Length: 208
Image (cartoon, rainbow, N blue to C red):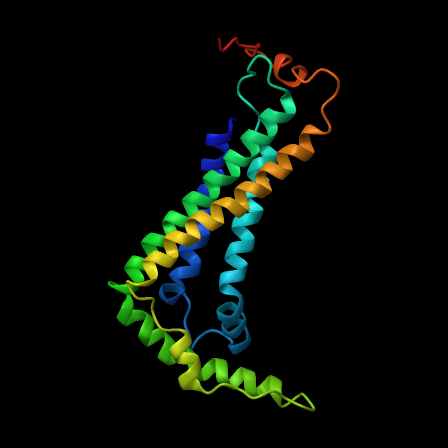
């Protein structure tokens, strides 16, 4: 598949990851979930989501194939361009989803998030204290009020930050996709058109 279709396919997975991460209060029970799982999820939720988006972008860049060969353009350049494009599509789909979720969490779901934060904070504190008791020189443990403030819903002012993150995420993941395309291009033989010309229904097209 070409870069747009490949990016869209993996972008759907990125959208599902974003929904699961930012709407965790709808499916994750603070009282019914083991403390260590709840603590780990809330501590590394953002990092795990970003790592997943990056992985999906790289995977999309690895799986895509240029749909056409422009005359005079090396196959390596096509791989670089289309790898970056496929990965950027993944990043943009995830970013737009997170932007919409920020808006919903700041308005529609704000009370639900506050209730989730109020219930989750004591469990996180209990696990942190349990771990600290095993250490000889434990660090200070933030109280439930501090943790609860950190779990509060976003505000409408965070929408600007979310928009900026879309751009930064697209640049980061798109660059990673381009690097993957470049590395794949290094494996191309002396005939850069061979991989496209050998496929049925594909032939070089003159763009002039």
